[in-house]
Image 1 (spheres, rainbow, N blue to C red):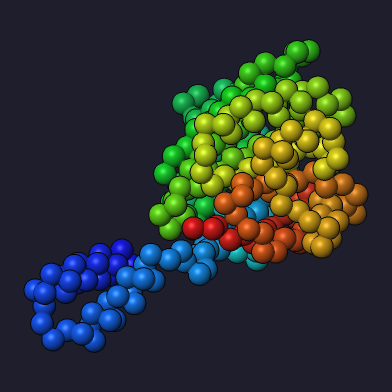
Image 2 (cartoon, rainbow, N blue to C red; image 1 turned 120 degrees about the horizontal axis):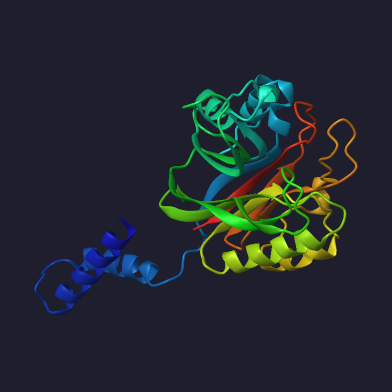
Length: 291
């Protein structure tokens, strides 16, 4: 509508100047004022609120309803979940946790498996474990990207390319926002994480628009292997928000769960709710997408 009004004002001025319109002095002055405003930059930049959560749910921690309650209480627009079971084993009653959470919270769902095993019974879907995205915004694109990993399911001693880096695009009021969800290597030796960070940075180069990366990075903010990632996509946490410690949930001593955001976003608030539904606490951030 803004562009239509500006175009109409410009046309009115041209007609008035050509003397096609008579007795329109007041209207001409009004349209001139509108046209002048159209030629100026906006006094304020429009912003769209986006609340995002990153949460390692420890395969439901034997109580998926409690996980659901934690997410519902935070009322996020985007939820990046790590350690999600999809018919994986008895520990989660062979439930498809991503689907169940999406249904309970009425959110769009995408699941990216890291491991895929044969089904528990012939003809059933495969048993999977990985990461998931829940979204109140429409998910318009989705890919399960490859990342180098040192498998926990085999005796492999060298990293190999495996799936499990969730890569989606959501439509936030007409703006395409890329959302990545990752779970990096847990070992104290940083070599695998260093490799994973390099691969994610390379992937980030393929998209210049608004981008969020959420996940369990399994390293503190001062870990050298994370520094290149923070340079490419800044960590939104600031000292004013508190320690940001997320693990272990009972008495958090480390900040290993993150939300990273491109400069298209402004951080409004950030918090770590004091909840015990998982062995991690979630990170919840309120962002403003600068339009």
